Structure formats: C-alpha cells, structure tokens
Image 1 (cartoon, rainbow over the protein chains, first blue to last red):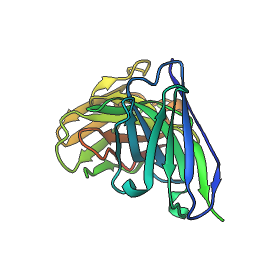
Image 2: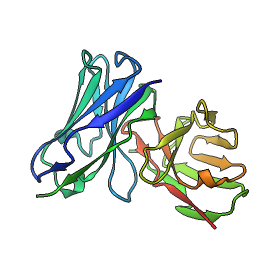
Image 3: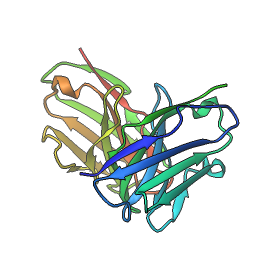
Image 4: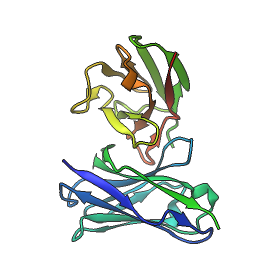
Length: 119
Length: 107
C-alpha cells in the first residue's frame, strides 16, 4: 500500500521560497507521475505540477515561472519549490500519485500540510 | 485551460436520499474525468476515474457517468459518512483542472 507524506516549514515569509518534500513509502518512486496540488483555506483545489520518474516535468502556467519540482530516487522523495511567495500562496499543499501522462488522476494523496505565508 | 463547472455548489439531503452531482467541461474531454470526496480537514479521496470506473474499495453506492462535456456522480442511498465535499477533475489536457466542489450537507 503506497503512502505519501508531506513535510516542510509551516510558515514562510513573503518574498521567500516555499520548500516541501513528499516521502513515498510502500512502493518505488521509479514509476508513475508525482504531483503537487494545493488548496487555499476554504477554497477549491489547484494542480501545481508533476514530475515523472525520468525527471520530466510540467507545471501549471499560472505558477510556471515560480515553481520547480525535483526528484530524489535514492530517498524515494520528490520536492516542491515555490519562489517569491505572497499571502495568496497560503494553502494546504498535497502530494499525490498520478497513474500516467494520459491518466493523471490522483491516488493516493498525502495527508496535506498547511503552509502560511506571513511576516 | 479547460474550465470545470460543478452544480449545485451545495445541497441538503437526508439519509437514504439519492443524490446526483453534475460536472460540465468547457470543451470535450472524452471520459478523462475523475471524482473525489473530501471530508473536513482531510485529503481528497479518489472515488471514480475514467468517468465511470470505481476506484478499488469504493462502495457500489457511488457511480459515475457521462462523456464529452457532461458528467454526473450519483450516490444511490446517502449515508451519514457520505456528507462531504465532492470534486471532479479533468485529465484530458494540461493544466489539469478541478471543479469548484459540491458540498453535501445534512437536511
């Protein structure tokens, strides 16, 4: 049973960089598509981007210039980096597995981690 | 981007009711649609993929249908554990997008 767990700082200052890691257990990261999704408090879901185990990535154009997703297969982890954050980036951040490029629906999900952007 | 519009945004229903939620895509997405259930403070949980395929372990009271631009999620007999927010997601093209959610509340 594959499980995902997000980790990282819960508080980030405006203009700084948000960094989160997702640890995959119960299965290898060397397959599938690995996604980040976020949800502002009380609002809906927004897809941030994915990384494939080969290292290829795709990002939501709404965040494209600020987002980097990377992979560490030796640790079975993938990471999110979001630069120049503002209060609008305050959200619960989820990592989730996607099944393939053409079937990138999400299962399972991590439990989520709240990141607040505030000085 | 493909816009996903869910209706209604919220509904009140009683235990035992049959509930239907609609999701409409701004352009055709074949059957590349998934449904998720989210309870307060929890991560979304996958219910259905490919518009009508039930995720392993999901009760048969959940069903999905549709193709092209119009899709539905039906709960055949609402139970207390089904009160939650439901989201659709298209994976026909990137960027991947979600509907705004439908909150199912107790009447």
